[in-house]
Image 1 (cartoon, helix red, strand yellow):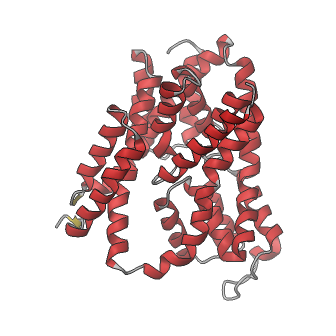
Image 2 (cartoon, each protein chain N blue to C red; image 1 turned 135 degrees about the vertical axis):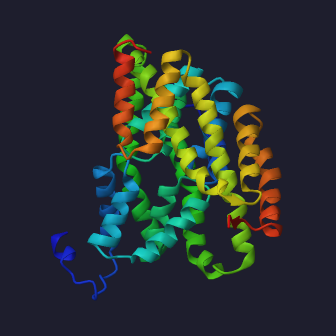
Amino acid sequence: MSETATVPPSIAAPIPSHAELFLAFFRITLSGFGGTLAWTRIMFVERKRWMTAEEFNEAYTLCQFLPGPNIVNLTSVFGSRMRGATGAIAAWTGFLIVPFCVMLAGGILYERYGDVETVRRILSGVAPAAAGLLIATVVKMAKPMFSSFGPGPVVLLATAFAIGLMRWSLLLVLLVLVPLSIALAWWMPPRSQP
Amino acid sequence: MKADGDILITLAVQFAIMALLALGGANAVVPEMHRQAVELRGWMTDRQFTDMFAMSQAAPGPNVMLVTLIGYHVAGFAGALVTTLAMCGPTAVLAHFLGKTWDRFRDRPWRIAVQAGVVPISVGLVGASAIVLTGAAVHSLAAAAITVATAVVAIWSRWNPLWLIAIGGLAGLTGVV
């Protein structure tokens, strides 16, 4: 890793091999408590120079918008840009092995000790904190939307109401709201406040 | 926890569908997972679901690994493997193909409308997750206080979220909740 870190910016790094892709994402999950996105950026843009900052942002924007787990999709987009379909598989596998094993261990422990009083108490405090983190995520994501004119905030509230409060089927709600929202965005493109 | 074929097929189909509906990320389909696992199929109790979500937030790795816990609970190791592959596989294939073509349409008006239309829905879905999980996790004033305090600190500070999770766990351990 140290030899690639010293490559001057003018020289593009060689395209990583499949093994390098696998190992890069494997390492990212080993070092990433929560911050897998930050580590992916450091690894790809700063250390290895496999991508420019612009290429990284573009790939990330696509993944935020695609269905499915963002960061997992990101491994696929990166791997496939470097080495095609097999590169995507190498990156995807490297990224998922460690979290899968960790969660499997967590599941085994939970089935065995989930009813122990101490564990129950800890989880009864962690669960409301985790809900609080999710609320914070929503507020941060929604902020820019409420600062512009357009149908966005109405669609946002309608979605949260239909799924969160009414508990309607996700498939049916999306079948109605997605075309409606795209049509609204087509006729009333969001404009920033003057 | 016996892993017969029928339950594995159900898990594979349900989670692959959820992955394709997860606009904006895994957190968008938490209410649908809850609806399927707790309300429709009775695979687990409300409390177990909330516990698993809390664990997936506290553990290293992406939040989507909640599906691994659900799969393990329902059908053991095979179940964990099936839910993880179903949730992470199909959309990664989609990403592989779209990653090549999407940038070609960068300036087309329809692409801008599609993005502008989908983003508020994806945020609304995470909002729905927050509503469902708060309802499931908060059963006392003390728990509500933890939720509100965590949200406020996470919005207005740059603390590592793990500290907030740890404080919540400590409050639970000492019997505050």
